[in-house]
Amino acid sequence: MKKILLILILAILSVNAFTVRAQVAQCTGLKTTTLPLSGDYGGFGQFTVTRLSITNTSLIDPISVFVPSNATAQNKVPVVFFAHGFGGTNYQFYETLMRQLASNGYIVVFSPYSSSIFATHATRYNQLWDGFQKAVQQLGNIMDTTRIGFAGHSYGAGALPDMARRGAAQGWGNDGLFLFVMAAWYNWGTNLEQIPASTKMIVQVYWDDETNEHLISQNDIWNKLPQITERKWQVIRQSKTYCSLGAGHGV
Image 1 (cartoon, rainbow, N blue to C red):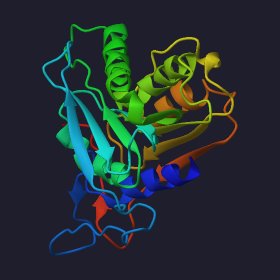
Image 2 (image 1 turned 180 degrees about the vertical axis):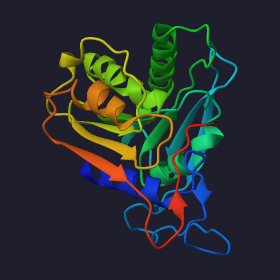
Image 3 (image 1 turned 45 degrees about the vertical axis):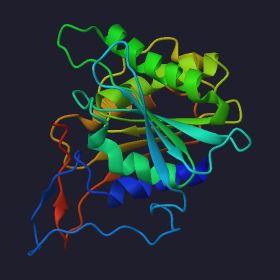
């Protein structure tokens, strides 16, 4: 679990995903992305990755599952369930990150939920959860659901505690469970005390976030999960000598 948490941190830092828009501060010339060396934490791993598409009965956008080549019925691998930011229903917004994780030997499940203003929070959470469940139902023969993680961004990050509660109730994560929370929006989950105290958690916020106040992550995630003692709070900010990194939430 510690290995994948480190991979997530470094992948977020090194991959120029849609959630981060580069701005020139004290730098000139073309902006480039430098990934860690292959085999290092945060770098692409040794396994080739295949994206599988599962029909979504709730939305037009399918459920996407990124499967590493080492995942077989004889070699089940851990699973990362990913919850996107509001409006980010297309898996391509986060594809580089998810492929990077999968190449290191983890199945990654991307489940879209509605961005309609008429959808309730309960509806969106149920859509997110239904997608995760459907992926496990169809591909559970190659998944080690005793070792799982929930990672998410913005609105999806706010949904992670409720997803973890539901997963734990299914017996998922009995041998390892983590939350990787990025710039969370409000948390609408309930009965969060049911999340196992053995869960590991990183809450990551961005210094220049102009949309989600850091206090949201503090009050709605950190403070609502006091039973989790093995946890870290991480603030990402730009270098003073290189290009700055904004923290947009638009898609």
